[in-house]
Each structure stands twice: as C-alpha cells, then as structure tokens.
Image (cartoon, rainbow, N blue to C red; front, side, top):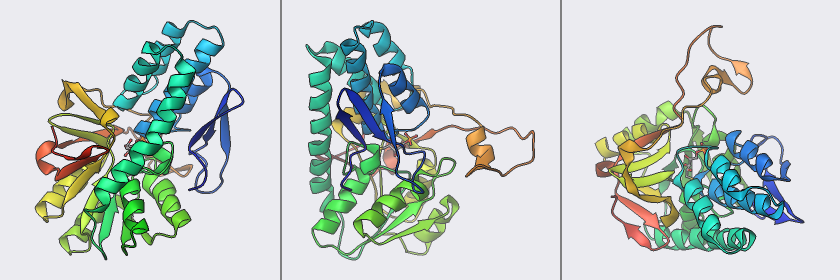
Amino acid sequence: MNMKTLEWKDGELVLIDQRKLPDSLEYFRCRNYRDVIYAIKNMVVRGAPAIGVTAAFGVAMAELAGEDVEAAAEEVKASRPTAVNLFWAVDRVMKSESPLDEAITMYREDMETNRAIGRHGAGLIEDGDTVLTHCNAGALACVDYGTALGVIRAAWDEGKRLTVICDETRPVGQGARLSVWEMQQEGIPVKLIADVAAGYLMQTGMIDKVIIGADRIAEGGVANKIGSLMVALAAKRFNVPFYVAAPMSTFDTENSIYDIEIEERDPAEVLYYGGCRIAPRGTEAINPAFDIVPSDLISGIITEKGILDPL
Ligand code: MRU
C-alpha cells in the first residue's frame, strides 16, 4: 500500500477513513485532540498499533494548542479500553520532552517494527501455503505494512506462492472490508469466507497456518478481535499452527489477560450489517468486540525481536 493509514501534515493528523473502505478511499482530518478521540471511538482508525500512534499525535496536538495535556491524555486513554498500545503510547508521549517529536518517532518505529515482524514471520510460511487470518492486522491497523498481513507480505515478497483466506469478521467486517482490500492492492491471492466456515476449512485440510494480530498479550493469553477464540479452538483440534503477530508494545506485563477490560460496543453493530437491519425490531444483542485466546492454543508470537512463546 503506498498510502499511510495516518499522516502528520501541516499541523493536522490525516487518517484514512476506514469506515468508508472498500467502497471509497476518503480521508478524515483531525485538527485537535477531540477529533482524535472521535476517530478512535468511531473506528475511523482502528487496530492496536494504529490506535496507539494516533493517540500519541492527539496528545501532541493538545500540547501544541496549549491545552491541559494531562486532562487530554486521560480523555484520549478513555477512548477505547482493550488495545494496550493506546495506553502505552499515551504514557510514552507524556514522559517525553516533546510530545510531537515523540509521536513522530513512534510513527517511524512502527513502520520499522512491522518490517522486522515480517522478516521473522516469513520463515514460518512455506511455498504454496494457504494462510487464514481474522480481522485486519494489516497496514490499515498500523502506520503501514501490518503485523499478521506484514508476515504475509514479507513471505510473498520472498517469492513464496500463497493464498490468503480472510474471515469476514462480523460484526464490523474488518476481514471482508479491509484485509481483502489490502491483499487485492498487493495482488496477493485472497478469498473471503463467512466466519462460520473457518472450522470446516481446517477440518478438510484447506488451511496450512493461521496468523492473527493482537490487541493485548498478557499472562494467560492474547486478546484479539471477537471470533479469534473460535478460530484458535478449531486450529488446535485440526492441528493447524496458530500464530499471533504483534509488536512488543502490545505486551502487557502488569495484568493477567483475564483481568483486562473487553470492550462492549453498540448492539447496533450486530443488529445491522451494511446499513441493513438483519433481525426483528426490538431484538436485543450482545456485542463484545474482543475475545481471549488462551496461551495453550498459540504456537508462537511473532514479534520484532523474534518468535516468542506466549506468556
Ligand atoms: O476493533 P478493531 O478493528 O480495532 O480490532 C482490531 C483487531 O482486533 C486487530 O486484529 C488487532 O488490533 C491487531 S492489529 C495489528
């Protein structure tokens, strides 16, 4: 992808508006930290590393505008609860001498980190593999390149022939809308499946590996997009290696994974799809945005430092 998910331009943070993809490529301009909070809450920008770097620029904008930076930092932190990169990024800019310089450093680091994750992970993929991924842990979830999709990009660039299977990823459809789009931009062969088809594909030997991203890695497992747990359970049952690709900034060494807050989003995301209501009026829905993959279901965690065991 030639364009960046986010870009600092003339004192504004310009984001690809991910709500509009794949139908149109539009940009959303954040002129102050309140715009940044809106963008994170409403998933204009999403994906753990991208949320982190966006949040860092949000705090920097509050400082540049002469606003109460401490208060702004707390508000930014309250925008979404599960991806630890958000808290890591805000704390890091708050400890720095210059929030803007630090945010720019984090932006550059994110690009280097993803390429290092790709280099480490590409060796796990064999020529001819079919790789299943869930949600979008691609360029759009980071500054660019991606974590799970970064591994796929790196393997593809090494000349390995592969096919990517994207879970649709209900309710918001990050797999169908974003991961498929990214793979198509690169010319990497990709097929879409309904989330419920993943188990069958693994049972019938159609998947060689699973690679997903992470919102938080802590003692006991990995929190990632809702549906990751079901994919991991099926992968274990049918002996398909299950990898998580994530930067070290996604590790939370202070909490158990079962103590973290799992975001509960608007039930409307479940009740509507593509603007169409799919259940009777008055239906109640439950909409947890993430679930937890226990460590024993994970074959390895691909990081910029190498492939690590789960915590
Ligand atoms: O709700 P989202 O779209 O922000 O959730 C994103 C995910 O769960 C990704 O898989 C995760 O953040 C890894 S992104 C490199």
